[in-house]
Image 1 (tube, rainbow, N blue to C red):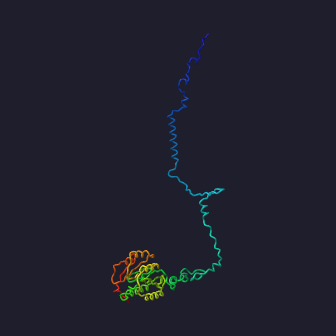
Image 2 (cartoon, helix red, strand yellow):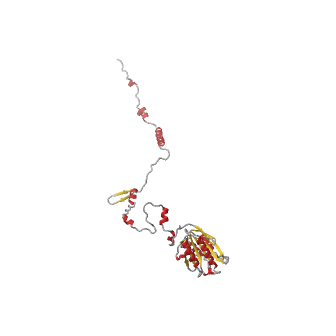
Length: 331
């Protein structure tokens, strides 16, 4: 009888179990990665994502669509809330349309016409003809007298050689008792120069003559400017010749009267008796509303130490002159 043979499995020693030996199976090694490799993969993914994001951003400032801002008002009422835009506010605040003129045409036609203007129908013959033929003259508006010149033209005239340029001239002449001395020569010379200057004006100029002592004697007894037409010139000559020296002197009141006329130029003739104080000189400059140029002419035997007339002329941009009464030429 053959003895029993041992089986191959029994001949081999038993294989140790992996878990019992403390070693990992190949399958487990493949499923588990080292920590350093996981950290490397994670950082690489973050860097790659950041690079991708940066490459997709546009260069420079992006375009931004213009948006219109506005104010919205909320009208909260008892039963509802209404939102009002700017357009609604502007529309609601616009003025109401004015009612149409319902005046009948017949009533319009019956209204009185302006004095000095004729009613015109049909086509106009031109602005020049309308102004020339239908408007009242400037002379009649100023003095009530008839004239044909245009008011406002500038020219230069002079008194005792001092020129003055403008369109409105005021002649202020001292007629106090002191102007009577020296055989009446100061007054005669003043009259002569005054008339020569007024006679040189044309109808586009205006003038006024003020003779003064304690009071002011006004040409045509009306404190207004008069057109230098022939009618007014003739009347001015008679007025000048009628004046006689008398009374005291009030220079400041006379100048204040002259300023009320708003002249361009004032010719101021006086023997400067009494002079002006510093306060009066300041008052004269303050009262000169039209910024008139004041030309001052002083009469006397010799020039006084008082320089007030010079100061008045200088402050206004005018000129001063001294006339020796002994050498005055009277024609």
